[in-house]
Length: 225
Image (cartoon, rainbow, N blue to C red; front, side, top):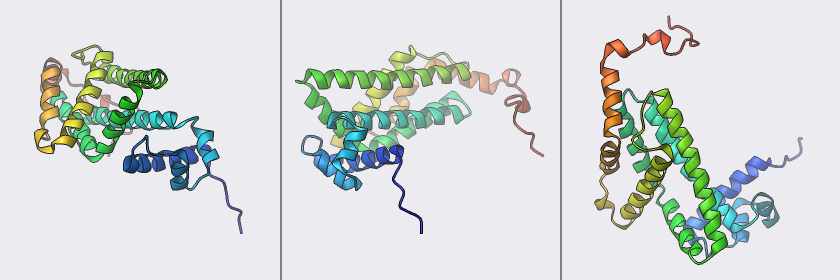
């Protein structure tokens, strides 16, 4: 009979984040104690503090992880599309799905923002984390633009702010009144913002002269038989 193995640090962190999301979502951030998060994760309070120095750090890590995941999924859908228009539609669809499926994330962000309003330490911590998220998104946008030979409609750093602001703002409005935010709204807004870039990608995709032969797109890939 093998002995019981202890969870790895990464597994412990994952359990804490999942439990925190559930408890914060049900009770709110301010009303939740770390002992409750630890109990929900099946861990000790000491195990929580070994991964996160404070409740604030845990909340910020949750929001940072979610923002990065949401934008990574959206940008991946853009890269997989056949043309810029379809790519923007995919980005918007992913963001809208995440907005409606994970409305609790936006409530947590709003609550923590309110808590930080009169607390310089919290406000500075939130500002630093949001800058890290925006930097991550901006780097992904730049890589995407380079890979598609696409000129972004705004500097990547500013476009990252717009994407976050649109998705967060529309999520709040949808949570207040779902009928006010139709599914295609974000896609139409992104198309307005990036219309010139989309037109360029569509023109390239429709011109056979500028398309590389299929087998040259990925020289390292094995040929299909």
